[in-house]
Image (cartoon, rainbow, N blue to C red; front, side, top):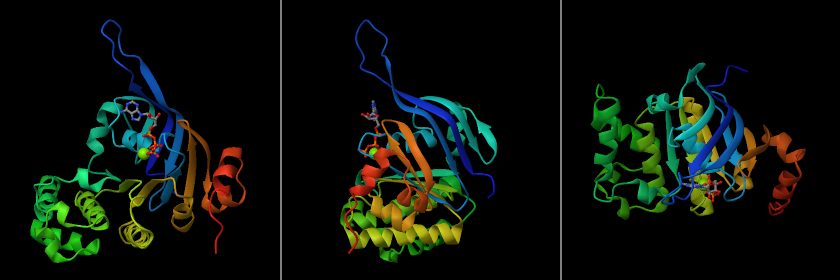
Length: 257
Ligand SMILES: Nc1ncnc2c1ncn2[C@@H]1O[C@H](COP(=O)(O)OP(=O)(O)OP(=O)(O)O)[C@@H](O)[C@H]1O
Ligand SMILES: [Mg+2]
């Protein structure tokens, strides 16, 4: 297999704890010695219960967490935490709550064009906008709409289009299908698969839905309490879990019909 596009080695991150008047805020550890490899064109799922650190991991990768320790290697180059912002063009993150990620007073077309103009001033932004809407299966007239005029699934597609406007190599999807109903979920996963195949995107996908993982990811990492319990191909982890917690998680999947 080729070298990973992204590698984390021994990464630990901390959140600032409660402030008090006389003491310095203490740091609370949220991730413990995380090792992660993401390959080109790979879909890697991160699973784990609520609070296990999935979102924190996604945010750490895009440089949204201040207290980051460990090695961060992108495209075989080592980055310091304060240099991770320079990777914005390479790595984009999308969150579950698409409505609050979009400016309510901005038409969709305007919002996406702003990103195109900022990151790729050389391209025809109107043409690029229409190409992006088509890519994520939204109709042309979506560009005239405001976020509240769209369904949850459509808004999520807008967020994907806006992230793609940057032309990233890695897309981090933080629980983006959790709030959607099952048929819309399946369409969204198909779209992500298409992006992976057609554009060679690497996708890091967090979810607590193991059925989604089974139908969609190449490899899976199981997290609990800020630690990685096991990593492997979906087949290996689902058929021969080595960790007791993973076994329990798998038992909670409803039997297939
Ligand atoms: N901004 C923050 N400040 C302090 N602690 C935080 C902050 N964000 C998250 N945490 C803590 O870090 C831990 C991991 O949270 P995180 O949101 O990464 O979990 P998660 O796996 O994404 O959960 P969920 O499935 O509910 O989205 C939790 O204990 C949480 O309380
Ligand atoms: Mg989360």
